[in-house]
Amino acid sequence: MNIEHLKLFVRIAATQNISLAGQELGLSPAVSSAHIHKLEDSLGVRLVHRTTRKVSLTEEGESFLPHAVEVLSSVEAARGAVGAGSSTPTGTLRISAPASFGRLHITPALSEFLSQYPELHADFRYSDSIIDLVEGGFDVAIRDAQLKDSTLVARKLASDKRIICAAPSYLAKHGTPKTPQELYQHQCLNLMGLENWTFETPSGQVTIKTEGRFRSDNGDAIRDATVDGLGLSLNSTWSAYQQLLSGDLVQVLADYPLVSDAAIWAVYPSSRLIAPKVRAFIDFFAQYYGETPYWDKQLAGQGERMSD
Image (cartoon, rainbow, N blue to C red; front, side, top):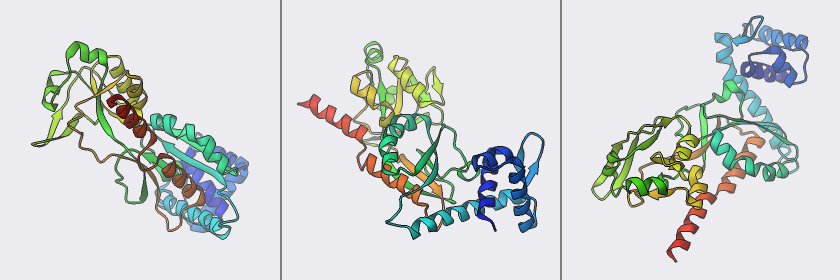
């Protein structure tokens, strides 16, 4: 089985276009079509449906895709292992990450990361949608939710501490809640899917189903609306730390920590061997964030200065 044919097939699955997939690999449309025909002939099945506008995978193609990805990952890892210690990761690293987290905490570190690996290219997709790694042809995805797909491997990169925030202007007008139950008297800005806020209290866990006049599927929008004084909101410290440092936001209900096991994870397709470029990315950012991420260190430092 030809490795180059497998590479083309995986990119076709991602782009749904034979010509575009071939162009990414430096192949003409005619050569690309010929390669796919040869792969199908070698397997004895049709892998793609072809139309004038796009291609889609057949049922057999869908079944074959994860195996093709794993073969390519194993081949790349094996090549890297042979040259371990004498070569650096090479090729293109394709990463999917949440838009806000990527902009705030990945892009600023890319210069340092790529300077360590001069033969590596980075291709990033910043989107809040959960993207299928295999179908999208991605090497790694950054996620802030627990892993549910057993075909993926996850490694924790950083903690994801969450707190309740408000603008000083809102609190001056509406007062500061002293207990979780007082949230029922306030406007709560909700990120879709996170309407129930669970707190640790002296009498056990308390869950508040919050309500307000504004909700969104975008964390940046919720944070910015909070800065504008529309209400209280639940925020990750990685998202709101700059506004907390500037005083545009303040933490409320600090004596009642939220119950959460959220974290920032790097996930990648399971394989016996991990590609050197994937290992390099994960190791770099796990060290870059550290056990206590820099955003939480800055907030802790501010709190110490204020208490002096």
